Every structure is written in structure tokens, then in C-alpha cells.
Image 1 (tube, each protein chain N blue to C red):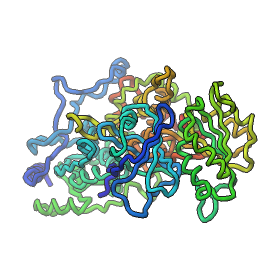
Image 2: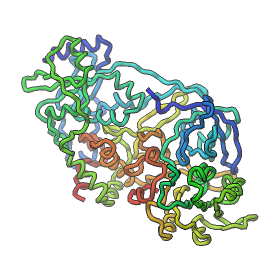
Image 3: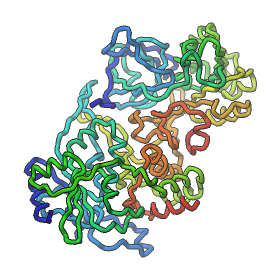
Image 4: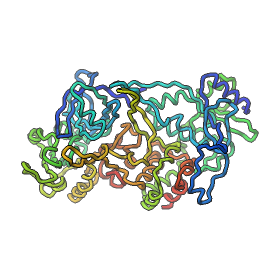
Length: 277
Length: 358
């Protein structure tokens, strides 16, 4: 019988620093099927396993159709500290992908009433959206406009900052803000919600949110004030999934499991659930 | 079948390499783990002083106790052990464990049988559970008429048996003899091999009765979803000590965590063990808060269930909303074991009444 806890061995083939405590790891499955890329939808997650250090969920963020997987990981606990100490060639276990992922083009159409996308992210929340951004045309269609509001603590904490020019070239608008004034930063200062007052929000859009728990309520207020419908606001929820297959209850939110029915939910689904955000 | 034949049957099972468990140990005057709530004592609500019965290995077939008492602990651990090894690890390699011990459970009461319906659904795709289930022989038991203590007033009748998972069922009639039913081919095969043929077969037809929807279940779910009354949970939150006893003793609580436990340098076990949604860490993400190299406090350690009120609500919501939505039956068998062990006297029966009347 299939064992849902069995991991697949993957080798680290690349490591790059993103900030002083966040690294981007590139993995390649050891048993590679030629010409076959891992089928992962943007916004899904995988469990990374290091025997002796446990497992934890991370959202892959590599470019679509790659034959590798990229995970962007902050050193925050035993497992991630161990991962940060690892080198190219070292091996980890991966299982998944799990969850629903962001809505993407099906039969040449984005299954959303409003076809433009406003991405509002804070800190590490940018990670589960990078695949979507890199594969904008494939996932969101040629016509849709994409605007990103991204808030980070300071300029050095901005993830993937060397790619922003490339993203802009692909027609993606990106508005940045940092928490506090600092030298060499000429852009916006303040929380990500501040961008709503300073920038024009792309019209006819669905909102995609991902960020630390404290970000959600203030952003929701802004979006609802801007007349976004409750089912046009999509949130990616963070939970500590242990099993990943909807059994262990750690990620339960009201009637849903974040690992199975999520991690992406509409605000309409969540608004009446206490402690959802 | 009479008692002597039953004991012969148990002896036969042991000879066939089944490890046989059943209600067999009685609490005596000596210190036994009987839980008597100080709250109940203080309020003069002492439970009836019958010796508590515990499930144990049947060294002698005559040790089996078959009566109306619910064993103190349920049969949960035989289906979902408090700790199990998913993998042995050595360096970076995971090796699966295979355990093929054949376990026979004799005298499983109706309520604990109902709980097995839930395990069968929840662990439908779980390799470890399925292996254990394949190697288990379930012998149910009930006395006619019904169990008075049950808060949901289930009647013992064939309509009930059809919806319970068992291999063999012993119905004690007034004559003290057992009427024998089988609920699976495995049960028939074993009885026939033992040499007993006077049984009736009951065709298992799923955990849920198609015709009559469980009205009580619908009422409680409505109370929780449509008429959320925060006062109930705030009050309970003030009382609850979050000891987690109710979730450990509950036959239907199955939350778990997965931990790597080292046994020596670079090797150890990946274990799955019981967890409780009453514990603060249950809903915590991304480790404890910490200070980074520049002295800044890193976010983290966020808990989505922030206080006892939210955590006890989560427990009830799982049993009476999430499980009904997933499987069409309640995540509570009505055994009231949780109320028996609660140190502050929270009684599920009373809480449900409040929810329904809210």
C-alpha cells in the first residue's frame, strides 16, 4: 500500500543567500524521469524532511516547467537551521505537493470573475507567488494585468530583488515599501497597506494575499473599502501541517483543512471562522 | 454459545497465535489509576462505586469480563497507538517498520465499535492503520436491552449491528447464552475453523443509516455553526485547565504530531504520537520567537488558537461539525469518558445542551 509519509530523496544542487537569514535552495530529485518535471501548481506546498530534525511545509517557488524545485527558507528553528548548514550535494527528503494552489488558466481562461491580479504580500509571503509571477503568461494569461504590493522590513530583506527588473519587463507592476526610513531607500515607507493610499490599484482585479498573520486584517479592510467582493479576495494561510493529507488536525480551520482544501481560501470562505487569520 | 464455549474459543484463538485482549482487570482497593474528579466529589456527585474495569491481555480465557461497564480506557490504542514508529532512520535513510502481530479484541462494546467506524474513515489511506486493521479480529459484545448510560440513547438491535464494524458479535441474551453474529468473512472463517456454525451473518452496510438522518447531530451542528454563542466558550475557557485528559481518553480523538526521536548518533525513529488540540503549541507556526544577529526580534511562534476558549471550541467543532461534514456521523460516541476524567467537571452532555439551546 502507498505510504503517504514516504519521502523522495532530493539533492541540493544550488544555494543562494536571499537575506542574512533566508536562503534559496535548489533541489533535484534523485530518481529523475527524463523530460518529466515535477507537477506542482503555484501556491501548493511540499513537506521537507531531514531525518533527525523532522519535517515542515514549504511552498516551492521555482520557475514553471523546471526539472528542479526551489524552496526559499528562513532559518527559524531546528529543521531550518540544519538545512541552512547543508551544502550542495547534500540530500533531503521531499513529499507532496499538497493543497489546491492559486487559480490558474484552464482552457485558455482564468477561472475568475475579475481577470487582473493584485498581489499583496509581506515578508516571506512573496515566496508562494514567485512561480505564478515567473510563469505569468502561462498561469494568468497574456491579457491579465498583474500588480504587486510588497512590504518588507528593509530593502535588504526584499526577496528575489534582483529579478524585479525582469518581472517588470514581463509587464508586471511592482510597488515596494519598507517598514522604516533607511539610507539608500528612496521608495515608499510604511506598511504594505500604505501603498493603497499612494498607488493606483489595478482595476477589475482579484486580490491574492500572502504574508505574516498580522498583515491580513489591515489589508482586508483596505480591499473591502476598495469594493473588492469577499470571494474576490484570496488568502494563502500559514499553518504547521504535520501530515499534509488532512488527518492530523493541526491545520484545521473551521470545516476546512489548510493542507487539503487550502492553503488558498477566499475571504468569503473564512470570514465567519474564528481564529482563521 | 455459552460461556464455556466462549472460553474455549478464546483458548483456540491464542493457540492460533492471536494475542487476545479484552475487559479483564478490575480496579481493587489497592491504588489503581481510577480518576475521581475532585470537582465531582466536592459537589457530591460521586459516580456509582462499581469497580472500574480495564482492558488487558487475557492470560486466561476466564479473565474476560463481559457486562455493561464501559472499560475505563477505550480500545483506541489498539487501532491508533499513542506512539508508533513510522520509520527508523539512519543518517538520511528512512526504513519502514512492519509489524504483523495478530490481535484479537474480545468484548468490544457498542460505543467503542462506533469509534472504529471513525478510525476506518479517517485512516482509510493510512498504510500503518490498514496493516494493523488487517491483523485485528474484532469481537463485539452487548447485553440486551440497551446501555442506559448512553447520552444518545442507541438501542441494541440489528439495525445498530448493521452499521458497526466487527468480525464477530456476542449478544448476551436473558438466558446468559450468547447469540453469535458475524460481520465479516474473516469472522465466519475463524468461527468455522474453530468448529462453531450456529451463527447469523449481518451484512455491514456502512457507518451511516441512510433512512433516518441523525437529528441530534444536525441540531448540534446548527447550534455551533449558525448560532455561535461566544459566551459558552468564554465560560468554558475560564474553567478549562487544558490538561488534555479528555482528548487522551476520548475514543474518537486522533490528533497527532510527527516527531523525529534520536536513539543514537545519526539514527532514531520518526514517530507519530497522540497530540491534543488543548496544548498551546498545537497551532503554533514557525518556531519560537527569536532574536536575529542584529538584535531584532524575529516574528514567529504565532498561535492561531490563542486562548483556552478558542482551543476548547476547536475540540467541539471538530467532533460536531468537521467530522459530520466529512463522514456524515458525529465525532462523539456518547461514552462520557471525557466528563469522568475532567478535573474541573466539564461535562460534554451539559455543554451540548447549551449549544443546542443557544
